[in-house]
Amino acid sequence: MAIKKQRTILEEYKFMVQKGRGQGEGQYYEPWLKVREIPSKGFSHRILGWKTGRVHHLLSNLELSYFYILEWRSNVKDIRERYPLDPKQTLEIAHMLKIRHPIHPKTKQLRIMTTDFFITDEQGQHTAISVMPITNLEKKRTIQLLEIERMYWQQKNVDFAVVTDFDIPEPLIDNIRWLHKARRLIDGPEFLSQELIMELESYFYKVISQSSQPLAHSCSELDRYYDFPIGTSLWIVRHFFANKTWKTNMLVPIDTAKPLKLNS
Image (cartoon, rainbow, N blue to C red):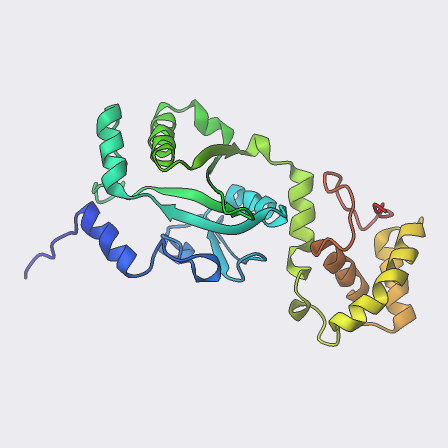
């Protein structure tokens, strides 16, 4: 039986680019790696993005947390995860720095490097972000690989930053996670329309902002008042926050067992 010849790193890069990986923008972007292609310990995530309208492939809880922050930032226009680095350039940088280029742990073949997030803001400016636990920065090998990545983006005149769990406030993430799936009306109760939501907003705001009762209790009363199915009013509240119709201090946990403090 003939042995199948393995592609070189440059051949592999060309092959994957021709398949569309690492190409496109917004809803048309194809991540270099997808969740189903990576061995997982249960910490990978597929999540529909607000800004892109496509499913994002995130390989850790920390990546998911930072993704939520990017979704929440108004000035972020596009989020591209698992963005590939041209191996011709990373090989040259590794050689110049006298650093061993990454290899696949099983095949021992040279591995194409990726940046965790490639972000585009409303002004069209790009930022490359590497996300990792802060303890990883104590490892010499991690620092070496980050230097390859940093120099790669420097040569392209793109800002590069490292984000760790130390930089991510947990209350903010918990709040965004709570409201994230309520952004689109299509994901809520079928009878809700944009017109109905707009009609309800002022009365909902009056009731909840003036109430000393827990948020869950106020929403239950609103469900009874409008004869809504249980949980509808709480979903509507999440929708108002997800679309920034309502505002609160997002660095303070939103607790449905407590009154909700709204910003005017």
